[in-house]
Structure formats: structure tokens, C-alpha cells
Image 1: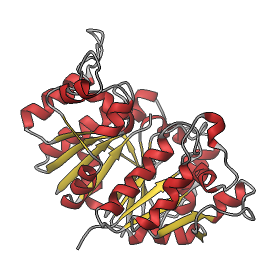
Image 2: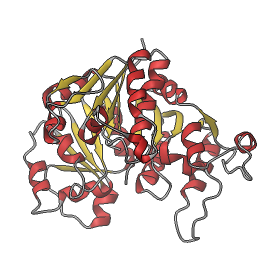
Image 3: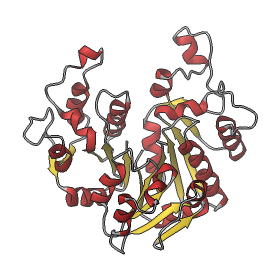
Image 4: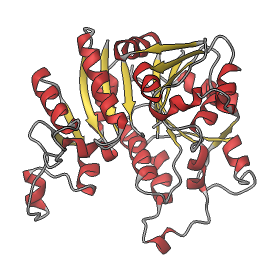
Length: 119
Length: 99
Length: 130
């Protein structure tokens, strides 16, 4: 049986290639039919904002990559409830259907996966 | 399934330690290396937070980083060298480095 | 135990040295390294163009000698490497660049190699940040 991998993405979307390169790990895993989970934590939750206009920074739209996740078979998508609340985003619409988890649920989530990459 | 969480950012300029402490499982462990060992600084809120962790959570630090910074460490801390780091990553079910 | 070791930070980051010392200790302890994978700024450690002062630690050289001596599988993410100007001869030609700087010790390949290594290993251990 394939080992499962949880990618924890903590990077804000426009602070460099970090957020995109974290997402690429998840997408590549999905392309190989591996059991991949993706958790948005800390500043990573800013990636989910639906009001972004990255073209003003001459950046490609990250939300296209986010939307591709389910198509690549990455359907275990989570976000930290606390990270959202800390940033006043608890009532904001998300560009992606993600399950909101409290701290203890995140702890249990990490426990369930065989391997973790936090970046 | 216990996790070894590895931190290397200074907790005074970065939120990784505080995020990590919130989602630590009761059987997990913390390994401080690089500037993350400044969390051991006596008299700091970070040191206090580490001291207040449940006893079931083991606290480790990379010996070379603690020595290099001349820190006085708490009694519950276990210092490890690189063979010790390797042993910990075998002992725990997975290693979660907060990159 | 079988380890997959992934490096995300540049050679001047302390975590890069930590990764090498960990890898050396793993082999010394009788463990196996199924693959080293360099991603993000980790790709700079595979550059043959890093020049260190004589009295400083030369991590790209140490990595190279370690991988060669231990006959390890060293893979550099191609997308991350191209973005950061680390090219082998094929890529330098493909993109009409004047020089290739990926040391021959390393192979350019995709992120699938990271996933394959993680599948083959008992432990995936990542190094990055400071």
C-alpha cells in the first residue's frame, strides 16, 4: 500500500515561489495516484482568498493550481480554523472547498498520515 | 503514530514554535536546532512555554547548536548529537520539519 | 532503516550543513539513504560554481564528495533548478544558455523522484530554513 503524505503549506501566496512549490509537491503526488493531503496553516490560509489579483504583481494565478488539486486526485484539503480566525478570515469565502479543522483535529490529521512535509 | 517535530527558526521572530505547540500530540516530541534553540533562553516566555508542555512530550535539542550559543538549558531537555538525531528519527514514526 | 533526505535550503544556510551531517550519521549508523532530493533553494548545493573562502566550510564540495564516495542517488528538482539558474549541459543547450553548472554528481529530474523516494523509504526527513 502506498504511504500517505500530508503537505502543510504555511506560505503566503506572493512572498516568492514557496507557496507554488509546496502546491507542486501535492500535485505531483496526486499525478502519481498517491494518497496526498494538503493543509493550509498560518499564512498559507491567504492562498485561499478569492479576491486576489496576482496579475498586478505580474504573478500567475495560484488559484488555477488550487482548482487543479481535485482533478489530480488531491481531495483531502484542510485549513486551520485558528489560522483563519487569527487573520480575520473566518467569514471570508474560500476559493477552494476545504475542511476547517481546530488544533486537536490537526494534531489527529498529522497522526493519520505516514509522512509530513511542512513548508 | 508519534511525530518528531523539528524546528530551526528563532521563536522570537517567527511563529513556527507557537503553531507547533498548539498542534503537538501528547506522544510527540520536539527537537530544537539552529536558532530554534534560543527558545531555551532562560527568562523568556518561550522557555516557559516549553517548561509547561505536558511531561509526555519529550524535548530535545541539537547539542552543537546549544553549545555554540552558550545557552543554559532546562532539566527536562535532552541534548542529542547527529547519531542521536538519526536515532530519534527512527524512534518516532515520522519527522515533521518546519521548513 | 531506509531514509529519504530532502534539502530545501541553500548551501550557506545552517540547515544545509545539518542535512549533510545527518546523512553522514545515518550511513555511519548502518542505515540506508534511498535518495537525496534537492528542492527549492536546495538546488544551489548541486552547483559547481559555488566558491567558498579557504577557511570556510564548502558544503557543495562536501555533498559532492559524500555522494560520490557513498554512491548515493542524488536528484535535483529540474523545475526548481531551472528557475534558479542551475542547469546541466542538456538544459543549457535547450535554453541557449552560455554555461552549465550542475555538477555531474547530480541528476536533474522531476518531483516524482521525491515521491518515489518517500515511498521507498521508512522515513522522509526534510531540511530547510535557517
